[in-house]
Length: 355
Image (cartoon, rainbow, N blue to C red; front, top):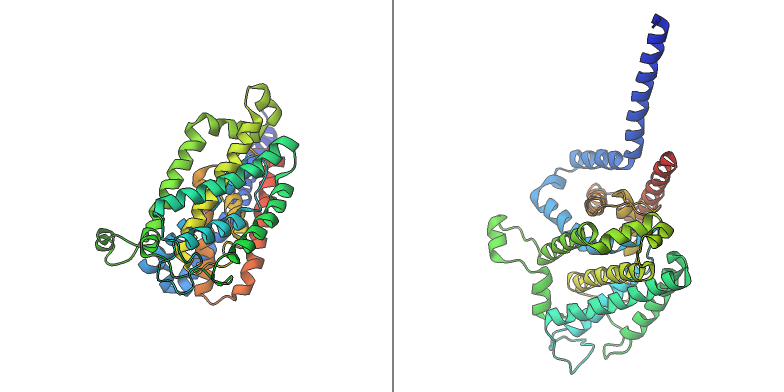
Protein backbone atom coordinates (compact mmCIF):
# COMPACT_ATOMS: atom_id res chain seq x y z
CA UNK A 1 0.00 0.00 0.00
CA UNK A 2 1.36 3.39 -0.97
CA UNK A 3 2.14 6.11 1.56
CA UNK A 4 -0.63 8.29 0.12
CA UNK A 5 -3.21 5.52 0.59
CA UNK A 6 -2.13 5.03 4.20
CA UNK A 7 -2.44 8.76 4.85
CA UNK A 8 -5.92 8.78 3.33
CA UNK A 9 -6.99 5.85 5.53
CA UNK A 10 -5.63 7.54 8.66
CA UNK A 11 -7.39 10.76 7.74
CA UNK A 12 -10.66 8.89 7.15
CA UNK A 13 -10.34 7.10 10.49
CA UNK A 14 -9.60 10.37 12.28
CA UNK A 15 -12.56 12.02 10.56
CA UNK A 16 -14.83 9.09 11.45
CA UNK A 17 -13.71 9.20 15.06
CA UNK A 18 -14.26 12.96 15.28
CA UNK A 19 -17.70 12.54 13.70
CA UNK A 20 -18.66 9.87 16.25
CA UNK A 21 -17.53 12.11 19.10
CA UNK A 22 -19.46 15.00 17.56
CA UNK A 23 -22.59 12.85 17.26
CA UNK A 24 -22.32 11.74 20.88
CA UNK A 25 -21.92 15.34 22.06
CA UNK A 26 -24.80 16.55 19.91
CA UNK A 27 -27.16 13.71 20.85
CA UNK A 28 -26.51 14.39 24.53
CA UNK A 29 -26.24 18.15 24.19
CA UNK A 30 -29.28 18.88 26.35
CA UNK A 31 -28.03 16.75 29.26
CA UNK A 32 -24.56 18.31 28.95
CA UNK A 33 -25.98 21.84 28.97
CA UNK A 34 -28.14 21.06 31.98
CA UNK A 35 -25.21 19.53 33.88
CA UNK A 36 -23.13 22.65 33.15
CA UNK A 37 -26.04 24.81 34.36
CA UNK A 38 -26.27 22.78 37.59
CA UNK A 39 -22.51 23.19 38.20
CA UNK A 40 -22.78 26.94 37.56
CA UNK A 41 -25.71 27.24 39.98
CA UNK A 42 -23.77 25.30 42.64
CA UNK A 43 -20.91 27.80 42.35
CA UNK A 44 -23.27 30.77 42.45
CA UNK A 45 -25.19 29.58 45.52
CA UNK A 46 -23.49 27.17 47.92
CA UNK A 47 -26.85 26.37 49.55
CA UNK A 48 -27.78 24.48 46.38
CA UNK A 49 -25.57 21.52 47.34
CA UNK A 50 -26.44 21.44 51.03
CA UNK A 51 -28.29 18.43 52.44
CA UNK A 52 -31.57 20.29 52.99
CA UNK A 53 -31.60 21.51 49.37
CA UNK A 54 -30.77 18.06 48.00
CA UNK A 55 -33.59 16.50 50.05
CA UNK A 56 -35.96 19.21 48.77
CA UNK A 57 -34.99 18.46 45.16
CA UNK A 58 -35.43 14.73 45.77
CA UNK A 59 -38.87 15.34 47.30
CA UNK A 60 -39.97 17.53 44.37
CA UNK A 61 -38.67 14.94 41.91
CA UNK A 62 -40.71 12.20 43.57
CA UNK A 63 -43.83 14.41 43.66
CA UNK A 64 -43.74 14.80 39.86
CA UNK A 65 -42.38 11.34 39.05
CA UNK A 66 -45.62 9.27 38.87
CA UNK A 67 -47.21 11.55 36.26
CA UNK A 68 -44.05 11.33 34.12
CA UNK A 69 -44.07 7.53 34.42
CA UNK A 70 -47.62 7.55 33.06
CA UNK A 71 -46.94 9.94 30.18
CA UNK A 72 -43.84 7.91 29.25
CA UNK A 73 -45.98 4.92 28.25
CA UNK A 74 -48.16 7.10 26.02
CA UNK A 75 -45.07 8.52 24.29
CA UNK A 76 -43.71 5.01 23.72
CA UNK A 77 -46.90 4.43 21.67
CA UNK A 78 -45.93 7.48 19.53
CA UNK A 79 -48.57 9.53 21.34
CA UNK A 80 -48.85 11.88 24.29
CA UNK A 81 -51.40 12.81 26.95
CA UNK A 82 -52.50 16.42 27.36
CA UNK A 83 -55.13 15.48 29.95
CA UNK A 84 -52.58 14.40 32.57
CA UNK A 85 -52.58 17.68 34.52
CA UNK A 86 -56.37 17.86 34.69
CA UNK A 87 -56.60 14.27 35.91
CA UNK A 88 -54.09 15.19 38.60
CA UNK A 89 -56.24 18.19 39.55
CA UNK A 90 -59.50 16.24 39.59
CA UNK A 91 -58.15 13.38 41.69
CA UNK A 92 -56.35 15.80 44.03
CA UNK A 93 -59.56 17.71 44.71
CA UNK A 94 -61.64 14.54 45.12
CA UNK A 95 -59.06 13.04 47.50
CA UNK A 96 -58.76 16.24 49.54
CA UNK A 97 -62.54 16.72 49.74
CA UNK A 98 -63.11 13.16 50.98
CA UNK A 99 -60.31 13.47 53.53
CA UNK A 100 -61.07 16.88 55.03
CA UNK A 101 -61.04 16.91 58.82
CA UNK A 102 -64.42 16.88 60.56
CA UNK A 103 -63.52 20.23 62.14
CA UNK A 104 -62.44 21.92 58.87
CA UNK A 105 -63.86 25.44 58.66
CA UNK A 106 -64.80 25.18 54.97
CA UNK A 107 -65.67 21.49 54.81
CA UNK A 108 -66.94 20.50 51.38
CA UNK A 109 -69.09 17.54 52.43
CA UNK A 110 -70.34 18.54 55.87
CA UNK A 111 -71.70 15.20 57.09
CA UNK A 112 -68.88 13.06 55.72
CA UNK A 113 -66.54 11.29 58.13
CA UNK A 114 -63.11 10.84 56.50
CA UNK A 115 -62.90 7.27 55.08
CA UNK A 116 -59.68 5.20 55.28
CA UNK A 117 -56.80 6.84 53.41
CA UNK A 118 -56.01 3.75 51.32
CA UNK A 119 -59.65 3.48 50.24
CA UNK A 120 -59.52 7.04 48.90
CA UNK A 121 -56.27 6.22 47.09
CA UNK A 122 -57.98 3.27 45.40
CA UNK A 123 -60.98 5.45 44.47
CA UNK A 124 -58.66 8.05 42.94
CA UNK A 125 -56.76 5.42 40.95
CA UNK A 126 -59.99 3.88 39.65
CA UNK A 127 -61.16 7.33 38.50
CA UNK A 128 -57.81 8.03 36.84
CA UNK A 129 -57.68 4.62 35.18
CA UNK A 130 -61.25 5.01 33.90
CA UNK A 131 -60.44 8.36 32.29
CA UNK A 132 -57.25 6.91 30.82
CA UNK A 133 -59.18 3.95 29.42
CA UNK A 134 -61.65 6.42 27.88
CA UNK A 135 -58.74 8.14 26.11
CA UNK A 136 -57.25 4.81 25.03
CA UNK A 137 -60.58 3.59 23.67
CA UNK A 138 -60.94 6.53 21.28
CA UNK A 139 -57.29 6.26 20.22
CA UNK A 140 -57.53 2.50 19.56
CA UNK A 141 -61.09 2.20 18.25
CA UNK A 142 -61.31 5.24 15.98
CA UNK A 143 -57.59 5.64 15.19
CA UNK A 144 -57.62 9.20 16.43
CA UNK A 145 -54.31 10.83 17.32
CA UNK A 146 -53.75 10.92 21.11
CA UNK A 147 -53.09 14.66 20.87
CA UNK A 148 -56.67 15.29 19.69
CA UNK A 149 -58.29 12.78 22.06
CA UNK A 150 -56.50 14.02 25.17
CA UNK A 151 -56.97 17.66 24.21
CA UNK A 152 -60.72 17.04 24.11
CA UNK A 153 -60.74 15.02 27.33
CA UNK A 154 -58.66 17.70 29.04
CA UNK A 155 -61.49 20.19 28.47
CA UNK A 156 -64.14 17.68 29.53
CA UNK A 157 -62.27 16.81 32.74
CA UNK A 158 -61.76 20.47 33.59
CA UNK A 159 -65.51 21.04 33.25
CA UNK A 160 -66.20 18.17 35.66
CA UNK A 161 -63.59 19.58 38.03
CA UNK A 162 -65.22 23.03 38.04
CA UNK A 163 -68.64 21.50 38.63
CA UNK A 164 -67.30 19.30 41.41
CA UNK A 165 -65.63 22.24 43.17
CA UNK A 166 -68.97 24.09 43.25
CA UNK A 167 -71.09 21.09 44.23
CA UNK A 168 -70.18 21.06 47.92
CA UNK A 169 -70.83 23.35 50.84
CA UNK A 170 -67.67 25.44 50.59
CA UNK A 171 -68.85 27.60 47.68
CA UNK A 172 -65.99 26.63 45.37
CA UNK A 173 -63.32 27.76 47.84
CA UNK A 174 -59.95 26.00 48.13
CA UNK A 175 -60.18 22.59 49.78
CA UNK A 176 -58.05 22.72 52.93
CA UNK A 177 -58.18 21.60 56.56
CA UNK A 178 -57.19 18.03 55.76
CA UNK A 179 -57.54 15.12 58.15
CA UNK A 180 -54.33 14.31 60.03
CA UNK A 181 -54.34 10.71 58.79
CA UNK A 182 -54.08 11.96 55.19
CA UNK A 183 -51.40 14.56 55.87
CA UNK A 184 -49.33 12.11 57.90
CA UNK A 185 -49.64 9.40 55.25
CA UNK A 186 -48.29 11.68 52.49
CA UNK A 187 -46.09 14.36 54.08
CA UNK A 188 -45.22 12.69 57.38
CA UNK A 189 -41.85 11.16 58.15
CA UNK A 190 -41.12 8.27 60.53
CA UNK A 191 -38.86 9.13 63.45
CA UNK A 192 -36.25 6.52 62.51
CA UNK A 193 -35.81 8.25 59.11
CA UNK A 194 -35.22 11.57 60.88
CA UNK A 195 -32.66 9.88 63.12
CA UNK A 196 -30.84 8.45 60.10
CA UNK A 197 -30.77 11.81 58.27
CA UNK A 198 -29.82 13.92 61.26
CA UNK A 199 -33.24 15.49 61.66
CA UNK A 200 -33.90 16.12 57.95
CA UNK A 201 -37.45 15.16 56.97
CA UNK A 202 -37.98 12.86 53.98
CA UNK A 203 -41.74 12.79 53.36
CA UNK A 204 -43.52 9.47 52.90
CA UNK A 205 -44.55 10.26 49.32
CA UNK A 206 -40.90 9.90 48.32
CA UNK A 207 -41.06 6.19 49.20
CA UNK A 208 -44.45 5.86 47.46
CA UNK A 209 -42.97 7.28 44.25
CA UNK A 210 -39.87 5.11 44.45
CA UNK A 211 -42.05 2.02 44.93
CA UNK A 212 -44.14 3.01 41.90
CA UNK A 213 -40.94 3.45 39.89
CA UNK A 214 -39.90 -0.13 40.70
CA UNK A 215 -43.37 -1.42 39.79
CA UNK A 216 -43.35 0.47 36.47
CA UNK A 217 -39.84 -0.78 35.70
CA UNK A 218 -41.07 -4.34 36.23
CA UNK A 219 -44.14 -3.75 34.03
CA UNK A 220 -42.11 -2.19 31.22
CA UNK A 221 -39.27 -4.73 31.25
CA UNK A 222 -40.53 -8.03 32.66
CA UNK A 223 -44.12 -8.47 31.53
CA UNK A 224 -45.73 -9.46 28.26
CA UNK A 225 -47.76 -6.27 28.42
CA UNK A 226 -44.56 -4.21 28.49
CA UNK A 227 -43.09 -6.09 25.54
CA UNK A 228 -46.33 -5.62 23.61
CA UNK A 229 -46.31 -1.89 24.38
CA UNK A 230 -42.82 -1.43 22.93
CA UNK A 231 -43.62 -3.65 19.94
CA UNK A 232 -46.74 -1.64 19.22
CA UNK A 233 -44.88 1.64 19.53
CA UNK A 234 -42.12 0.48 17.21
CA UNK A 235 -44.39 -0.84 14.45
CA UNK A 236 -48.13 -1.28 14.87
CA UNK A 237 -48.66 -3.44 11.80
CA UNK A 238 -45.78 -5.77 12.68
CA UNK A 239 -47.08 -6.03 16.26
CA UNK A 240 -50.56 -6.94 15.00
CA UNK A 241 -49.16 -9.63 12.71
CA UNK A 242 -47.15 -10.99 15.65
CA UNK A 243 -50.34 -11.51 17.62
CA UNK A 244 -50.36 -8.38 19.79
CA UNK A 245 -53.86 -7.24 20.71
CA UNK A 246 -53.48 -3.62 19.59
CA UNK A 247 -56.81 -2.45 21.00
CA UNK A 248 -56.33 -3.96 24.48
CA UNK A 249 -52.70 -2.86 24.73
CA UNK A 250 -53.49 0.73 23.79
CA UNK A 251 -56.39 0.97 26.24
CA UNK A 252 -54.31 -0.57 29.03
CA UNK A 253 -51.37 1.80 28.44
CA UNK A 254 -53.62 4.83 28.77
CA UNK A 255 -55.49 3.31 31.73
CA UNK A 256 -52.20 2.66 33.53
CA UNK A 257 -51.13 6.22 32.75
CA UNK A 258 -54.39 7.53 34.23
CA UNK A 259 -53.79 5.52 37.41
CA UNK A 260 -50.32 7.08 37.71
CA UNK A 261 -51.78 10.58 37.30
CA UNK A 262 -54.27 9.73 40.05
CA UNK A 263 -51.45 8.76 42.42
CA UNK A 264 -49.84 12.13 41.68
CA UNK A 265 -53.18 13.80 42.38
CA UNK A 266 -53.54 11.90 45.66
CA UNK A 267 -50.04 13.02 46.67
CA UNK A 268 -50.62 16.61 45.59
CA UNK A 269 -53.89 16.77 47.50
CA UNK A 270 -51.96 16.53 50.78
CA UNK A 271 -48.70 18.12 49.61
CA UNK A 272 -50.41 21.29 48.36
CA UNK A 273 -52.91 21.14 51.25
CA UNK A 274 -55.07 23.85 49.68
CA UNK A 275 -56.53 22.54 46.44
CA UNK A 276 -58.31 24.54 43.76
CA UNK A 277 -59.39 23.93 40.16
CA UNK A 278 -55.87 25.00 39.12
CA UNK A 279 -54.17 22.15 40.96
CA UNK A 280 -52.22 20.08 38.42
CA UNK A 281 -52.17 22.85 35.80
CA UNK A 282 -49.43 22.22 33.18
CA UNK A 283 -48.14 19.08 34.92
CA UNK A 284 -48.31 17.34 31.55
CA UNK A 285 -45.77 19.76 30.07
CA UNK A 286 -43.29 18.99 32.85
CA UNK A 287 -43.88 15.26 32.36
CA UNK A 288 -43.47 15.41 28.58
CA UNK A 289 -40.29 17.50 28.93
CA UNK A 290 -38.87 15.03 31.48
CA UNK A 291 -39.61 12.05 29.24
CA UNK A 292 -37.98 13.49 26.11
CA UNK A 293 -34.96 14.64 28.15
CA UNK A 294 -34.70 11.08 29.46
CA UNK A 295 -34.71 9.55 25.98
CA UNK A 296 -38.33 8.40 25.59
CA UNK A 297 -38.71 8.88 21.86
CA UNK A 298 -41.75 10.33 20.09
CA UNK A 299 -41.00 8.07 17.11
CA UNK A 300 -42.19 5.19 19.32
CA UNK A 301 -40.89 2.00 20.82
CA UNK A 302 -37.95 3.60 22.65
CA UNK A 303 -37.68 4.52 26.31
CA UNK A 304 -36.43 3.42 29.71
CA UNK A 305 -37.72 4.02 33.22
CA UNK A 306 -34.31 5.23 34.37
CA UNK A 307 -34.43 7.83 31.59
CA UNK A 308 -37.76 9.13 32.87
CA UNK A 309 -36.34 9.37 36.41
CA UNK A 310 -33.24 11.20 35.16
CA UNK A 311 -35.40 13.58 33.12
CA UNK A 312 -37.61 14.49 36.09
CA UNK A 313 -34.56 14.93 38.33
CA UNK A 314 -32.77 17.16 35.82
CA UNK A 315 -35.81 19.41 35.44
CA UNK A 316 -36.19 19.79 39.21
CA UNK A 317 -32.47 20.52 39.58
CA UNK A 318 -32.69 23.24 36.95
CA UNK A 319 -35.86 24.92 38.19
CA UNK A 320 -34.94 24.79 41.88
CA UNK A 321 -31.46 26.04 40.99
CA UNK A 322 -32.70 28.88 38.81
CA UNK A 323 -34.97 29.98 41.63
CA UNK A 324 -32.03 29.95 44.05
CA UNK A 325 -29.93 32.23 41.83
CA UNK A 326 -32.79 34.71 41.47
CA UNK A 327 -33.99 34.05 37.90
CA UNK A 328 -37.45 35.51 37.30
CA UNK A 329 -40.02 32.70 37.56
CA UNK A 330 -41.94 34.16 34.62
CA UNK A 331 -39.04 33.00 32.44
CA UNK A 332 -39.44 29.38 33.53
CA UNK A 333 -42.15 28.78 30.91
CA UNK A 334 -39.83 29.98 28.13
CA UNK A 335 -37.07 27.72 29.44
CA UNK A 336 -39.43 24.76 29.69
CA UNK A 337 -40.74 25.34 26.14
CA UNK A 338 -37.21 25.65 24.82
CA UNK A 339 -36.20 22.39 26.52
CA UNK A 340 -39.13 20.55 24.93
CA UNK A 341 -38.36 21.91 21.44
CA UNK A 342 -34.64 21.21 21.72
CA UNK A 343 -35.16 17.71 23.11
CA UNK A 344 -37.68 16.79 20.39
CA UNK A 345 -35.39 18.17 17.68
CA UNK A 346 -32.52 16.02 18.97
CA UNK A 347 -34.84 13.02 19.17
CA UNK A 348 -35.93 13.47 15.56
CA UNK A 349 -32.33 13.95 14.44
CA UNK A 350 -31.32 10.62 16.00
CA UNK A 351 -34.28 8.95 14.28
CA UNK A 352 -33.39 10.39 10.86
CA UNK A 353 -29.74 9.39 11.23
CA UNK A 354 -30.72 5.79 12.03
CA UNK A 355 -33.21 5.78 9.16
